[in-house]
Image 1: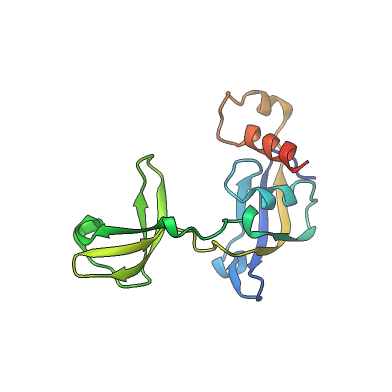
Image 2: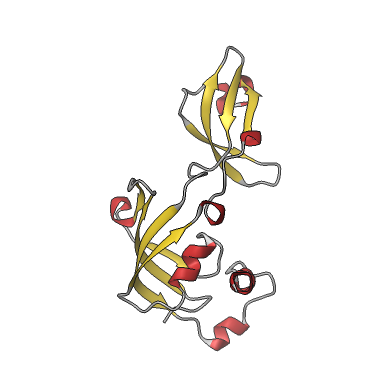
Length: 170
């Protein structure tokens, strides 16, 4: 059974409300591996995996506000075309990564190209979408109590963040 801090291997398929598939480990050609509680996956996805046994499949629904949120028009920005990587103008619909002042890389979509500026949509590609997942647990590697004790404060496995999510979920 999966617990917080376990390294898991899952197969999954993600679909929108209209049935459109937006992600699949089969399409990607390999299963997904992550540490439960690391924050790599959406909290509801991680919570669904917790308690599963190898070979078990769960279907979950994640509402918009617990997935990637509602679309925010304030996240549509205009920049000088010269500020794009290599100064090249990209076609409408192109995706690129831009670095935030905090050092994170955010995927953005080009929505309009003008003579000397470009309009970028910084909303997540799945904003405004409720998500449905079919998740199958393929393997789990449980951390021993001794290994867990070796976690330094602020470790990146997410052990603290998942506890907060569990408390908030009720």
